[in-house]
Length: 267
Image (cartoon, rainbow, N blue to C red):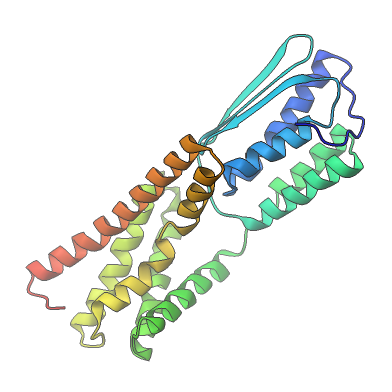
C-alpha cells in the first residue's frame, strides 16, 4: 500500500528500527483501546508507506498481538503481545488524528514520539463519572423494559454497587471473564435483596437492565466488521471472546438465581 510520501528518509538500520517502533506504538495504542483489527493494520500500513526507502511491508494483527515486517538492508521485524484491552474512544480518535497529520503533513520521528507520549498519558475519564453514567444508563434500560420508577432506581443502586466493588478489587489480577462474573454476581445479589424486601416485582427486568452494559456489544460489533473485511481469524477470536463474556454473565446471574430459588425465592 502506498500513500503520498512525506519524505520520511531511512538512512541506516537504527533509523529503520526507530521507524518500526513508531509504527508499532501507534498500532498498539489503537489495539489496546478497542479499535477494530482492520483499522490497526490499515493505520500501521499507512505510516510505513510514507517512506520510499523500505519495501515489502507486511502488517498482521489479532486481538492479542501485532506483527510488522519490512525490508531495509535485510528484514526488520517486530512482534508485540497485547495482554489487556479496554475501550477508550478518545485515545482512538487522537491516534487517528495523529496518523492523518503524520501522513499528510509530515512529522519528525522524535516529534511524532512526543505526540504518542501525550496520547498514551491521556488521563482516562474520572471513575466516579463513569460509574454514575453506567448506573444511570442501566436505570434507563430498566425503565425501557417496562420497569417501574422504583425498579429503575434499584437498578441504579445495583450497578452503582457492582461498579464500586469492581473498582476497589481491580488490582486483584482478574481478567475480563472473572470481572464479568463478579459484576453479574453483585448486581444480581442487590436485585434479589430488594426483591426479597418487596420493592421489586419484576426481578428479571431489574437484572437484565442492570447487566445490559456488561454485554459485549463493542466486541461483537468489531468481530462482525472483521468478518466483513475478510479478517476471518480476528473475527473468530472476537466472536469467541464475546461468547465467553456472555457465558460469564449467565454464570454470574445463574449462580445467584439458583441460590435464591433453592432458598425458596419466587420470581
